[in-house]
Length: 408
Picture 1 (tube, rainbow, N blue to C red):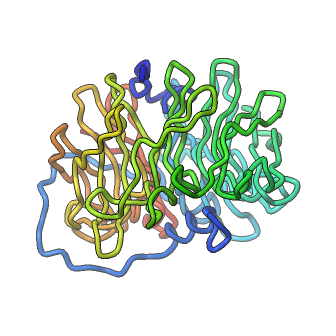
Picture 2: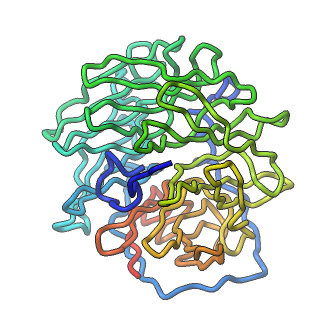
Picture 3: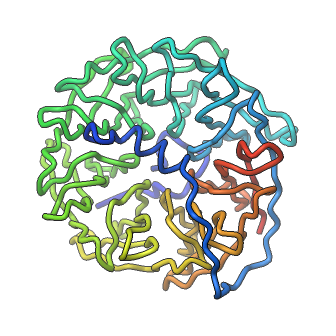
């Protein structure tokens, strides 16, 4: 694998690479984030580093509510993201938080209504060099099976680049998009395809879709989850939420430029975790890194490493005080330290931001307590100065979520 420093530039979101009907991947995403976990009293404590957390914006419902996705940064440090719901009659927002005056200066670029355009755009945004934003719309489009939308810098209504039919072309696109040098978009759907278990797709700038792979739900996995990770050879790497082994705990896969799929790891649901559900990253040697959530009667979530040969090592298993149930992948700095968030756990059981050193030792950078946010889902991003930015799906002044900055 040759990944060409895919993790080195956090402001270049075009190259930096974050289901079944009972329930669908779309509903699973929403329900997992919306349902509060029962409060647990943690007896132990974890070391906390000296960090400063600033709430840049607290959503009030009118400007959005429940931010689930990872933020996107432009070259000026402006932040872009989505919210999952607002006070009726609007149903979510796409927003920009400007670096020139970030405190309280949130601009709503789009208020969504159930019209078939951006009905459920809660995934990570992709921003190109011209300032266009691209997003997967999980249940929009002409038939309600999902779409890929484009929002211009002028803030006009989104352009529907492609509407999924729910058949062989896929159904319910459920994660962020990536692009290549020609402006082609790549992503996954949680359902549909030849076997109903989701697809990897390509959409040209003209809106023409090609299915690159249809999952069977068997040994190759099903219900792909998380953004695809490309390398310089035209291969894609990703994860499936289910399938693989007999117990269906998901897989990690490589999809070649010619469409051949190789399973790198099949999760067992034991100490290696299961149901991987966040974006993958890679280092210069081609090792992949990601997370798995909590599994009842097994683990509280893991951070893992997988070699190009498919050998998986669990770098860290969460215990509760250091976090519980990561819902997004990790990012990595130049020294090989990893950073991420967990949905719950920590001192108040409302989630943490954490750092792992290369050996997997955890430091709690911040433990959320409600007023500063609660239950982060979308993960973290770096700016050029090494500051960390993220969202918490709940908490803040109105309990509709926050945008935060974590300063070393």
